[in-house]
Image (cartoon, rainbow, N blue to C red; front, side, top):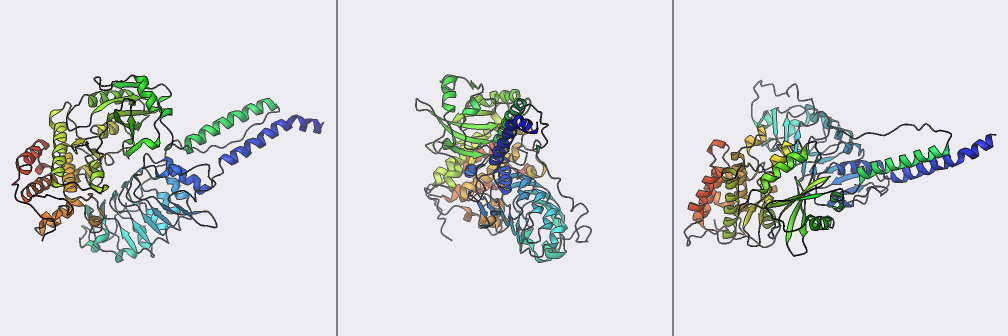
Length: 596
């Protein structure tokens, strides 16, 4: 009878065996690989660098940016600098127990520094500078007894410096400059080794290291300095476990097996699917609709959706905090830019569509035209004019051919007129919140147009992942905006002033040469002014610079980047100054930027 029972149960046992073999194959990637895939999933946008991270690999050791120990295959280095990575840093990075070097600097990461990094006790170097990280410095970093280098400068970190870091006796370099840290700098342990350059650019630090007396004159940390930010563990990351109650019926068992396989397949696809490499066909296949503003798109919805289905990562022309941008070429030769925004909040569709109707009605020579959008079940695909000249950021920093003086002045004037229209003439008036060189686009004649206006406020109002700080870009943000998160026309004026300095100098606002000195581009200008050398800010590669227009433009920029909002001019006044004093200089008075 036992043999008969075994024969009856054998099909079910075989199914169960196959199930576990398949599950094991699906989850064959190493634990370090799983941690890195979770890290990747948290990233909202990038330059596509992570598209080759494949969940089907046995380990992550051949992935770009990843280095492993040759024997153990454990991850020892994660180096992902300058790849436009935007999103929070996943707490799962704390599972990389043998990580020695973490280099995520010069990206767009936001949110808190994960306290789970304190679990990576073999870490020797942490480089997170040049992002938008906020919150407190985790006291758990004090557990990293092997740490030699810690650079978290040029972020938006707040609170006090944890005294626990003082016991890191191997720490050689320490940099928390250009944040919003407050309170006494701890004096115990290794903190006695650091000087002003480690702390410059914070609004209210005190201590003997920076020669600023603390109010209580104790030199110790405040009582809350050891209270790290609570770990923000993303909702929805559930661990699935449990036991199957096996019935005697092989048929029921097989059905359960199929159901479980479907469940696991869907779960693992969602968790580890190659979102960056897929086409947009999935976005539009579930019932998309096209909305056109004022007949701006002379195509049928079917024609547009058919083209959208063909787009993939090969058509990506840009990424940013608001989404990925694709090049959309129609059959008649017209080309558009398509911005993909993933958004699934309750009530988002109605709000988004109402706001887009407003943005679509705004037409101006110096603004990028929003033609319409595709209303997809999984995303919103905004259709803009395509500008062949690319972005001002690319023209200034990525191309070999240099912009001459006349081109730079015309670009500044166009950007000023576009922003002035948003502030004063369109209805409703719009605060941009993210004026920067990558949001100034150029046509084939190098005429400037302001892009992405309205998006920062639109997404922020819907409680998206984009916070008030992330709505802008570090280096361009006015001091009062970073402190309060409240945007006004005058915070846009400040950002425009930074943009002018960027165009003048050819340097990004957070150029490495500034950061090394604890400055940004405004700080550099202020330093040059104190030595009466402000003309030295001009790009030495810029030809045709004229002294009178340079001095007038510097005067406008200085007013715009005033630390006091009340002292900044309106954008209407900026346009007036540019037209009357900058664009009509004496034609014979040239400035040689290479002269003394």
